[in-house]
Image (cartoon, rainbow, N blue to C red; front, top):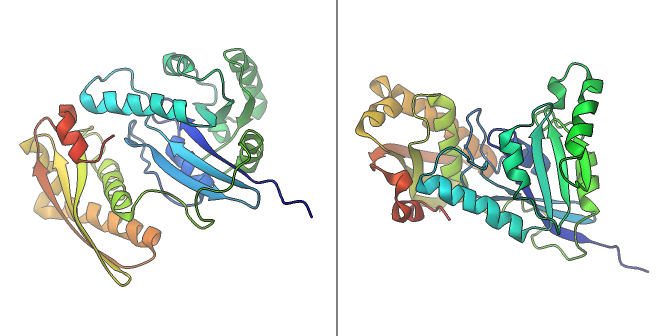
Length: 296
């Protein structure tokens, strides 16, 4: 009896900021392994999400949005992360928004590898009232680059993702799986806890604190199904500390509660979470500080 062919490969999910890369990764994996918010540049690290089917293992690498405007040390590291990822993967999923093509997409075109398949994934098609109106857009962008495939999807609604997986699977190399069948990420729970807390900061603070925030897990202990997590929220200025804490500590309490609930869902057990706020001026432009916070 002939052994079933199995394919395994790394797939970069790239695109301009806030186009839906993390939402797509989470939908494909079936769990929240990459944080999301309406704000651009929420993702700061390369996140590996894993999906294993009967005949394929997809290892998705969710990258930061390529940044054109800001040039501090943090954004230089994030842009470097994108270019390094493109050099290491088997397949590229270039995510764009339906009927939107601008300078951000043109910049990324210059980074795309010519020696590996690039699939153009057109997201947010559910927001187009007349689906036929997307056709001229698809025809236009197909001329921008020799894309291996063009697949319209809605990451938010989970539409057409099976077709995307089917299209991508053809380009994965023949290889045994790298991860166990039930693995969903290669990131540690400690890392995921920091990311979930950072997501709640973005979601609860709106525009009050743009990007001058980071999270450092100072202690992570597990006792049976209970996880005890001590987390420091790093802000750039003393004035930001009061903003994060809020009146009588109510905002920090809400942020911590929301993060704890997501951690319990992802980890499958109770979480005791203690949070506080620290001021580290200029951390986003200090490569040594960035390294201590886990930035590559």
